[in-house]
Image 1: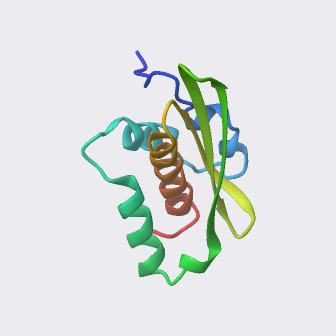
Image 2 (image 1 turned 135 degrees about the vertical axis):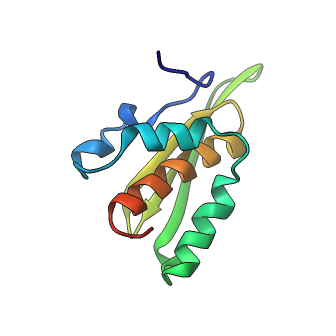
Amino acid sequence: MSLALPRCLILTDINLSAQLPNLNLHRCNSLIMNTNVDHLRELNNLLQRHGLNQYLSWAAEGGGVAHNPTHTVRAMFNGQMIGVGTAGAVNAAKRIAAAQAIAWLNAAGYP
């Protein structure tokens, strides 16, 4: 049985697994579901540890209706999308994208 956050896209929805065959989807989804982890801080710490801060950027867009907004945030690493989150709040979408970015970077050899 798979748990799902309301109105959120999980890594399997964006086909990042095709970019990195050894990406552990279960670990990434577990990271997203763990609300006790500050994914933004963890991502920042990982990038600082490897001297890669300058390569991360964010792209955000909003949509939906006023009473039910939808925000999509993409984590970009050197111009390549490595995470995307969609949620009702920008910060929630960014946390989802950060969790996916952590999993992508770990699979790429940056623990």
